Image 1: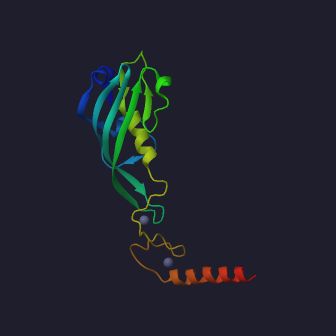
Image 2: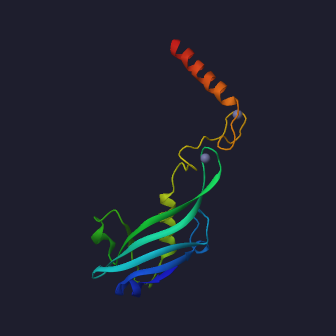
Image 3: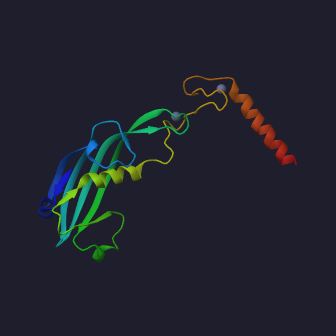
Length: 168
Ligand SMILES: [Zn+2]
Ligand SMILES: [Zn+2]
């Protein structure tokens, strides 16, 4: 998805951009739907300095680290991008992504920025639910679906072994 720099330079309010997930660089995110919906405003801060603010919404797929099931989550992320013609001048401004505008290009590829925002937001250890009971380490069944008899014995063994270690 391309935004013309001339549009950004003149500013706009709450414009919708639908970005096709096929058109953004692959950062390892698995998307559930086909698109990423962005609502963006462009503000002119001062000469040669601009800001894109808004929000993106999409649905991505995760694999639960406990039960290995795939699950989806709707994510909504703030977009907060500063654009400048001279990057070094505003380096002290942090907490937003800084993009230096090239004088040779008259477009900004929103897809690259959005792909990075989504990938950075992904949890390191996704869980389908906070209460996910995971897989049984002995028989391998998904304990969210069924229960098995292995669990208590395994727990008992582990504690017994720990007690023996402590007593040494
Ligand atoms: Zn799970
Ligand atoms: Zn089991």
